[in-house]
Amino acid sequence: MIKNPVLTGFHPDPSMIFVEDSFYIANSTFEYFPGVAISSSKDLANWNSIESPLNSKDKLDMKGNPKSGGIWAPCLSYYEGIFYLVFTDVKNWAFGPFKDALNYVVRSASIDGPWSEPVFLNCSGFDPSLFHDDNGKKYLVNMEWDYRKQGSEQFSGILLTELDSQSLEPIGEAVKIFEGSKKGMVEGPHLYKRDGYYYLITAEGGTSYEHAVTVARSKEITGPYELHPYTHLVCTQGDEMSYIQKAGHGSLCKSSDGRWWIAFLCGRPLENTKRCPLGRETAIAEVIWKEGWPYLKDGGIVPSASFEGYGEKITQKVYSYNFKNDNFKKDFLSLRVPAQYDILQNGSLRLYGKESLQSVHEQNILMRRQTDFNFEAETCVSLPFNHFQQMAGLLYRYDEENQYYLRIAYNEKFNEHTLGILCFEKGGFTMPLGMKEIPVGEGKVYLRLTVRGSCGEFSYAKEDLNWIAIPYTIDVSILSDEYASPMGFTGAFVGLACQDLKSRKCYADFEYFKYEVLD
Image 1 (cartoon, rainbow, N blue to C red):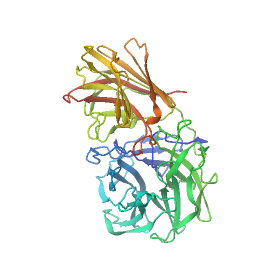
Image 2: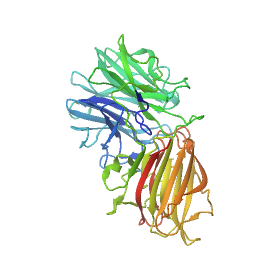
Image 3: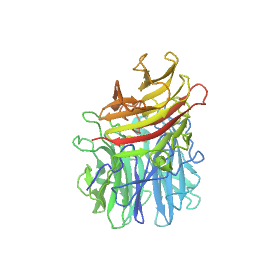
Image 4: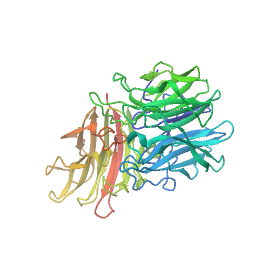
């Protein structure tokens, strides 16, 4: 049995396909760069990261995008030897009546790339999906955003647009084919065809505990669509005992042995809370067909904590990165634009100082998803610059408004470098050590973050590796969608950061980064 979720930590909005002998899942990356996370698996248990398709500023420039903007709900598909990837780049979403959501498509003969330059499709709404009909026609489906309405009614329905099969440019006007069920907020559409029916899979109910996967079908692609006997294929609303919560936004695929699967997002709240710092993760369930409708194999609409796949999970507890090769790139992301760094001859990573932790343009950080409730992250940094506005260290973040930073910087009052903690909570800023920052002198400083459930703690050491805990308790729960304002869609990350608010000339050298899963 394979335990859910299969992709832990921030892996929302899964789009899953099966090609030849492999499963592939594409996930949203929002403001993190490069755009769109793609993972592959032979057995549904063990997943490997594939180089992201939007890995250059020519393909994706998110400079200035708001927090939780950027890449929303990609759709991966495959037809006649070509992989297609449709995605949204959201430039505005949180404030006012409008959403600026630009939809594009790229394609490649190999999942490993190279991918074509993006082709603009439309901007009428987000969550685009590409459907390849068996008659050779191609269609785009996306939700429509109606700024004239209020609340959930702004999600006014699912649009269908025929595309030119070669250029992928729209042909004619879009047609509204589905307005959703009574749950509302219909989005995340995917189309499938089976036994003469078109099946429309959508997400409904928002992105939190009311989330759901809704199913409808029609003999004609333009509708009318009738709802599933249960309305929802997957939903955990009202079942507080379920191991996974917030289940919704799913996609179907069929493997070579004839079994059907649904990949969907879920959340796992911290004990005794409703907050999920691991973000929205990817889970899988087997689907069976009865009387022309898909159902969860285990019955009902609440997915199980495990399922029978094709292999057993190979566990790994320690992830060590020394930067001597490019393998770290598969696990680390930057913000909005590519990170600026060099790899030194000794294998250290030199990270250059850019903008502040609140910038939405050119921060320079390299972050790894938090994938476990209990973990320890560790690095060794040296900062050969002597100004308080030049800093580097270990960052634990959700977004610009909610994050913790153990940073080293020069302190003119001490006439040496000191360690301090910078805290951002709902946009408020504090430095809990105040004037009692910790002198660390010159040279290397070892930094560590230890997290167990809802509490975390920073510690440090010099070259004697005598670790000293810093007396400040981190509230992990604020690094969650549920705490973000007005809301958020990502998850907690931990990693490396460097800022230069004086001259943009400083750098910091990081010898290694280690992430260890704790019992």
